[in-house]
Length: 84
Image (tube, rainbow, N blue to C red; front, top):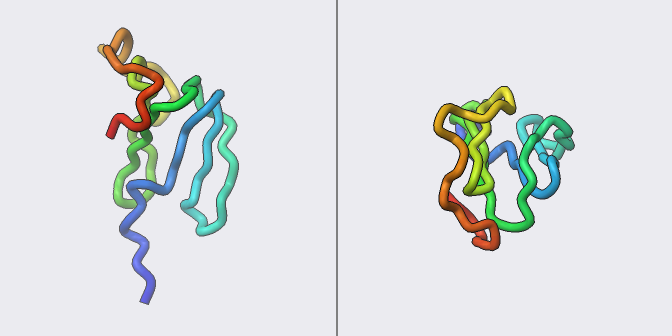
């Protein structure tokens, strides 16, 4: 019996505006990201695999790829490996 309620990590945004979705079970490239991150970044989705937000530790973008309120000037350090 397959369980599909574990989608929190199904979408990844990383690198130079790159992304991958695993929602269909097969990796699908995403070309709509706004982030540039050489290393440390994080993406969070809900249990159904719907994007909530992503960050490079300095800026946070919402599911519509817009900068969130108070989502700039954060004190992250891009060479870090992960933020969440």
